[in-house]
Amino acid sequence: MSKYIMPNLQKDKIESYLNKEGKRLDGRTPEEYREITVEDGISKNSASAVRVKIGKTEVLCGVHVALATPYPDSPGEGTFMTNAELHPMASQQFDIGRPGINAIEMSRVIDRGIRESGFLDFKGLCIKEGEKIWQVFVDITAINDDGNLFDAAGLAAIIALGRARMPIYNEKEDKVEGYDDKKGLPLDKDVLSFSMTFHKIGDKIVADVSKDEEAVSKLRVTIAIGDNKGEPRITAMQKGGGAGTINSEDMETILKLAESKWSEMFPKVKEYVFG
Amino acid sequence: MADKGIYTKRNDGRKMDEVRPMTAKVGIVPSADGSASFQTGKTKAIAVVRGPRTLHPQHMQNAQKGVLRVNYGMMPFSVEDRIRPGPNRRSEEISKVTEWALNSVLDLSGFPNTVVDVFVQIPQADAGTRVAGINAAAMALAHAGLPMKQMVSAIGVGKIDKTLVVDLDKYEDSEFHDEEGSTDIPIVLTSRTKEIALLQLDGKISIPEFKAVIELGKKACDDILKVQMDALKNVTGESNE
Picture 1 (cartoon, each protein chain N blue to C red):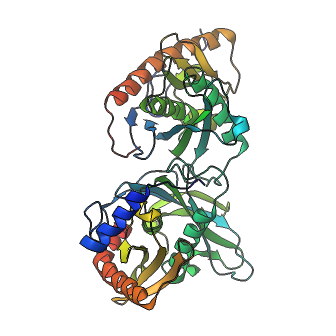
Picture 2: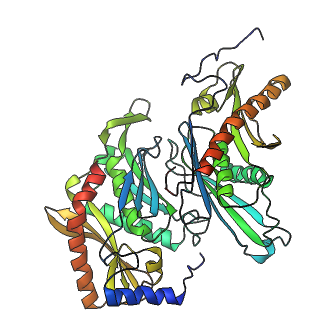
Picture 3: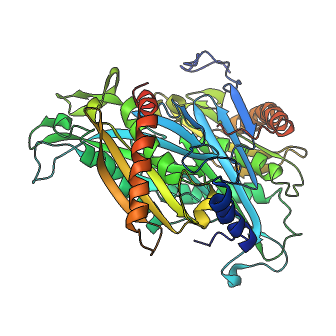
């Protein structure tokens, strides 16, 4: 991966504008997200496939549901896998080949956020205990990187899961025969969780970074928050973006911001996920 | 020909020499140097051009001209059985024949020691993905402003039992096995000189029939070229396949 090169003048400008004016170069406030758009029906050959854009950052995400045998240690549960590809079409900085650490980290954080929230009912993915289960794949491909692919990918994953159709299982012949358009995945809609990523730029904590802002970030914190009877509950966290420490004051700010952003965005996200 | 065979009607009601409904868009990936999408029926392709940029490692550079590199891939959710991400034998071959086809019209002599990367991705497949990818890639190269001697357009022509058809869908391409079965012939033609820039064949066909295939291909490529040129005149800057 080649490094994203940005003039020092631009770096200074981003930081000083935030510190002095409390605003970002595109006019947004520190906590403001860019416009989010969702489009369905990208591939009719999978259980679901959606396009999610945050500003100009764009990802495609599809869900596949396939037959498998369960793991011996969880004979009554289905399996779940998230895979993210930072494809070189999305950015000058991405290379072809095996997933790099950024793609791996991203898919693992998204995976945890969904898995731990209880959103996906693993027991509901069991067809016959010890013998036959459904395995669920979430595949995310980056199309255009204009910053904050993390949140675009995380949103795309839960939206694609929320809109996925269940395949029809023919038990006699032990095979899948098309999809049941009226039946979705076994989901616990009450515990839906989605992740938000915050960066420290200059002295400020900023949400939904642009590509330039991402390049001057001192640290990154991703928090997945789910609904627990109206109360926000954290389901996954990751401090990323290299070395650098979070002081207690910043942690306080991040949590406060995460909570208020979650309350603001959750109804909208719920609508995206369940249509 | 007295015996017309058993394939007398197409599933979707198309005429035998009719291409599926096409849409093309240029400028779909804002951060790229060139980008385009091409859709025929349910088959969708997107193509992104990055470069010319300095080629590393240095020993791969060509001091006379720029190097074209094509990477074709299907997205995991593009077909009914999930495709594992990453290269496989099929995608490696398609990348290479696509590269040869595009290289026959592209002139990178003004960009020594550089590389032009073309990324082709298939979000949804219903046969004919390599030709859809090439149609998108040709537009993306033009969008990137790279010198091209002429355009290329691509089409899959085929023979279903005894009937010649244009732009095969998945049923015609891989699910029809009766009588003489299905023959699939992807063709790429140059826009001005009508020369063949890519040719592959998978099946059985007589020489007179093959000649007729080329003629059908020419006619279809004329229609496709119109769609490509229209899209290039209307660069959207909006992302959509």
